[in-house]
Length: 240
Image (cartoon, rainbow, N blue to C red; front, side, top):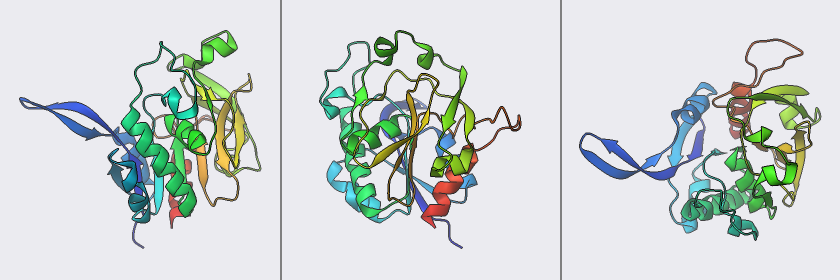
């Protein structure tokens, strides 16, 4: 059986090779490797004109909305927090159009970290621009520190990862208002949303963590890495 073509969002950054420094289309290789291990054929999607998004979707069998810089606050009607880096407006515009086209086409979607925020905003939702101000602490922003989340067992995510998983998910933004059709399906102990799913869609899951880099662990069930590959496997299975 032919491998389904899975698009992975990428970004423009300056890159060096030899004596040359040029703008390049970049993506951490962990995404492509995770898709390939799961049985898909990965292809990078440069953030070009939003007008091309629907054409890209028509050529794909699945989509990974990858992580990266925080979504610019103007995309959801807020003021940009000065503590955040300048937004990548070209990437925001393209990925929001891509997410809307993918939802409309019923394309299977796995939205990772920033990607979950893109999916939420594309569906009309909003974000908390600077999470420490809302919570009074910065524990969600601590790099490399695992925490346990509760997952709805009736969700597609719950069927893939179980009821409680340990993840590494540093972030300074979070979902505030859920977008149209989205359900929260995983939560941190302080009830910050850690994952969402789109109702009525065959597979449209957004997670706050990075399953391509840090497979989830199941502290109550077994100590070995669990379902990072499982989420990509579920995406590829839906894409078939």
